[in-house]
Length: 120
Image 1 (cartoon, one colour):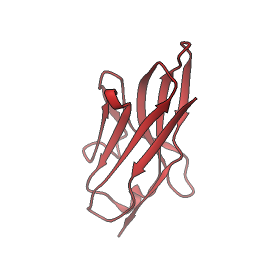
Image 2 (cartoon, helix red, strand yellow):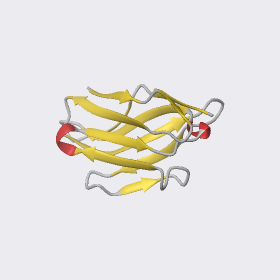
Image 3 (cartoon, rainbow, N blue to C red):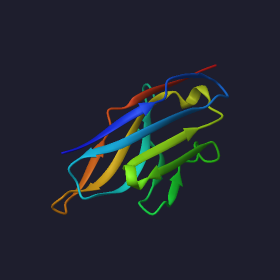
Image 4 (cartoon, one colour):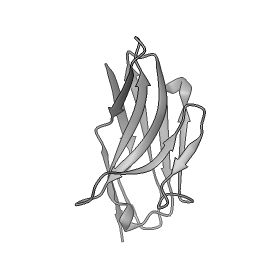
């Protein structure tokens, strides 16, 4: 069983910064793509940033230039540094990972979500 444990985030004023991290744990072979999604109140979940196992990144337009995704493969951990935050960035941020199980199956795993609030 694979679990994603998120940490960080919280409350910040507009223009400030927050960082979140997510570590994969459990029994698995390797972690493939990792990423962050978010869901604002009354809206659908949307992709924020993705990073491949080799470090190739992909950002949503709203995150590009302000957010930075990175990962530490040795720790099976993905990070999201969020700068120049806006009230519109307020959402529950979810970690996501594609994991190759110990028997070679691809599994998609989600974290429990962390609420990040940006006040005006």
